Amino acid sequence: YEVVLEFEEGLAQVEKNGKWGFIDMRNRAVVPLEYEDVSEFKEGLSCVKKNGKFGFIDKRNRTIVPLEYEEVGFFSDGLVVVKKNGKYGYVDRNGKVAIPIVYEKAMQFGGGYGAVKKDGKWFKINKQNQLVE
Image 1: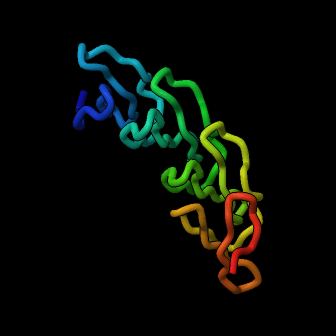
Image 2 (image 1 turned 60 degrees about the horizontal axis):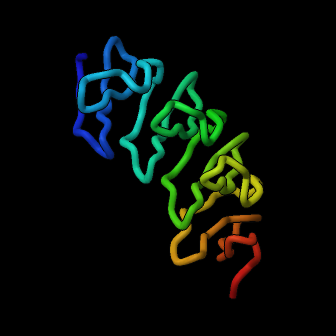
């Protein structure tokens, strides 16, 4: 490998010939070197990039959040901000759209609330996509 990063949750990010994957403590490849980029595993998930799109995989290289997003954030309060077709929304840890991808901008959830921008104005929403005062 040309790059080996620190072990997180028992796996290390590795790179060779511009492709990224993961190895375990015994130096066995557990996620093949097939991604343009990968993040360390946090709570069992890694953000990965392939063919210019982002998503999340688990430690067995199973796709949890489809690799179809232009941007993704980090999971917080069980949701992650995603961008698709220029709009933002939220996806849950099962890869399902939890809050529709209809906003001009969205910030990660914290304390049960997120901030979203629609029609040029910012709003606070809860996990049911309801406006909160």
